[in-house]
Image (tube, rainbow over all chains, first blue to last red):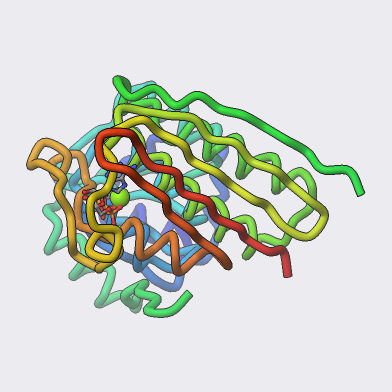
Length: 118
Length: 140
Ligand SMILES: Nc1ncnc2c1ncn2[C@@H]1O[C@H](COP(=O)(O)OP(=O)(O)OP(=O)(O)O)[C@@H](O)[C@H]1O
Ligand SMILES: [Mg+2]
């Protein structure tokens, strides 16, 4: 699925401009711990998180993630969104809670973005 | 062959700004045309180190040297030091307080991850004096 499909499926609001919405994503990783994202997420995957601080954008930047989905209506502030735009990260927010967000994406074919080796 | 040197001061009081040095280093490597996989390895390793510096050591300094075939990164702080480096290197070992965990860090994964993504890593530390972490990532 591409980022646009994901946004529609989650009835999410897109928060960043100039995104490559046709970018295809094969995997997703969900966590509120950036430590775990840094240790396990695959590149080009999408991060689903309930944590909302600038280090979420920084983590996504270092890991070469395609985008970030904030759950339960957690909306990043403008500083965070500017950072995301500088990085070229697609950011969206959904009202759905974590479990439902992950469940919908899993049923739509996304797989866990876990890499257990470097 | 010429080498490029860059120095960064990392503030210990501003968690929101942590990662700026790592971001700058990552962009420099990208602009130089280093392979995306090597850029990613270096970026993850230095970012983990930068975050550690902010959350455990009250900030510090990062210096990097970029050569045609590798980047050498050194993180120097004057924080509390690490008493048992072997223990600190174990996955899951963390002394981070709950306040750090609520910011999304403190799972005890950073140092093992730095080891995983760098090609060489050495830590020297003295309790009460500080810590120096040196890492090399080779461009394949
Ligand atoms: N620069 C440092 N100065 C002092 N202590 C450090 C430093 N870096 C790491 N440590 C110590 O080593 C421990 C393990 O570090 P590591 O980066 O693996 O985990 P963490 O930072 O606690 O959590 P995570 O990296 O998963 O967010 C830390 O909890 C801390 O006690
Ligand atoms: Mg750490």
